[in-house]
Image (cartoon, rainbow, N blue to C red):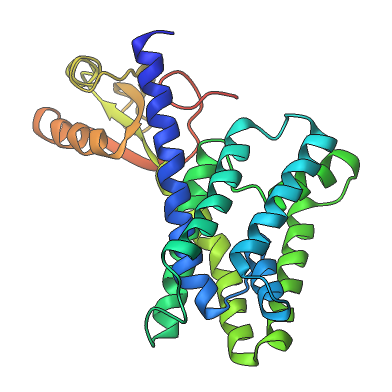
Length: 286
């Protein structure tokens, strides 16, 4: 294994660990004490913790370990080492936090503020995990099993399960907790989608100019990106123009835009947001 490969793997697994810690902070500090039951294994664990004698962290550990066993039985190793790592680490950290930092009630007396952190912290962590090809396990493993053996719409099935858990919170706790949980369920997917889109957000440049060489030299030599150039003709005056196409991260996009303004002030620039760029230098097909 080369040094570069080792550093890449170390960074990747460190980020997985950090995302898992952030997820557990949101769950343990903000979700468990307030009984916010908006779906997933943690939602089931909160309901079981209220109905029976064990704590939510204990039920979360038991359910996740059982689902991992089912995953190995029905899927083999197909649900991935990263998912196994995150699911196991998350369950262990929640159990450890329960012993080291016991919480008798909510951190503050502001339930709306706590709901915000209960949504945002796990959702941001989940988005990072999804972007890295991992997940927190739990109901994702159930979804993979169902997908393998049936033709059900997995997204719809998971939403129905999560909605059922949320409705149960209204009866197990009270209507206020149920409504908070329903709010969390609705907001969770929006936050995850938004974070994933922003993680991968790139800027797609379409530059119409007379002289593409300075622009291409800047893209290649300064930004260390590439570009595609082709000839075109203006529809009004029929002058020959060059069109430069390039894609880059937002930080580089600001540099390129400012460079074009200085060196090619008459260039026509179209900048488009794109969160799905696949190819060399960006994302692969794996």
